[in-house]
Image (cartoon, rainbow, N blue to C red; front, side, top):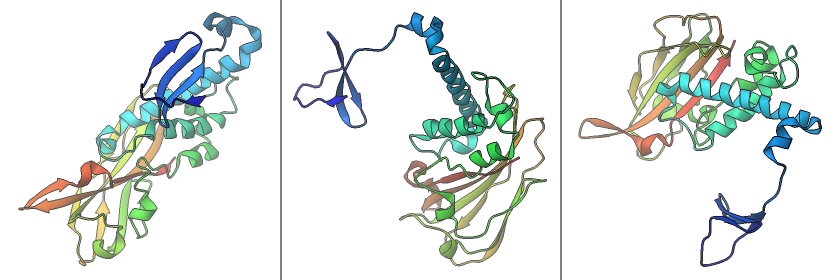
Length: 249
């Protein structure tokens, strides 16, 4: 791979060269690789096919999770969340000690302690890591999904983005079956607070325990707003909002 230094920005294929735009600018590489038919049939590439199949399964599981919490994630994510989550799902898949190579999957891996640990603590917005945003202890009741933040003083216990006047907190309790895709997300009422020195206990309680036989996932979201003439507007379109998967069971 080489960088293209030219006033003319080219994308496409010319002879044996492929020009394309990447994160580092306009790049060029030579054509090559193996034919699709050979990759699909040649015994020499059996491991490659197995790895490709498992990667696809991990990516699909990541997509399932993202779609299941779309209401939470819509304004609390970064541009690389899809690839970051796929990498984590690959680690979860690796904990599947039952399925044959090429069929190892997240649905089995997530039932193991190490698989759960790999996903636990995932931040959906890497510009806003929960531990750097909320500077208080976060207490989770896994039986009910209730989250309690005691003695919470917003002006002292938050990393406050410039211009923020208010903060909203919400919890989510999800049951997601990675085999069938069945999901049930229960969201707590939103707690909205001015960012001042008032101290209170924040309690976020989902209305019910989600139904299902899948993995139980617990989320906390923190979103910032700026109040202008009595109306709260999302701050920087959610660039500073934090969303974390606190626990997986």
